[in-house]
Amino acid sequence: LPSHSRSICVYEEVHSIKTKEKPETHALFLKKLAQVLPQDCKPIIVTDTGFKTPWFRSVLAQGWDFVGRTRLPNFYSVDEESWQCITHLYKKATRHAQAFIGYIARRNPLKCQLAIYK
Image 1 (cartoon, rainbow, N blue to C red):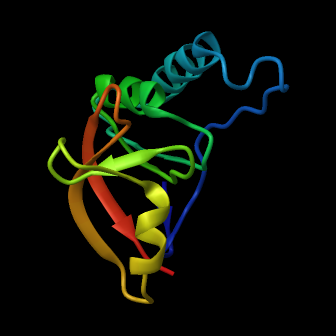
Image 2 (cartoon, rainbow, N blue to C red):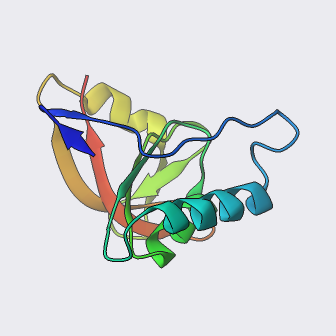
């Protein structure tokens, strides 16, 4: 929820190391979140590193959007043909955010907007 130029978390969960990266855990989280939100709500799910493209695809399948950080061992591409390690973007980062449409995850590419900044 937006509030005075900040966001307020509507729903969150904390999981043990045994369950935190399981697809079942992610699916149940999205199901519970959908139950507490108004039906016409289109949230932006904000995640830190550690979440991978299956998670992002699940969020998109709900009709929602996401913001997530990505890091090693991820690869990115701007054309789905030439892939580079995500670390190649680090040296291009400046104090001014730069955004472009690209793909992450070489084996099962996900088209998304990528942004880099320091």
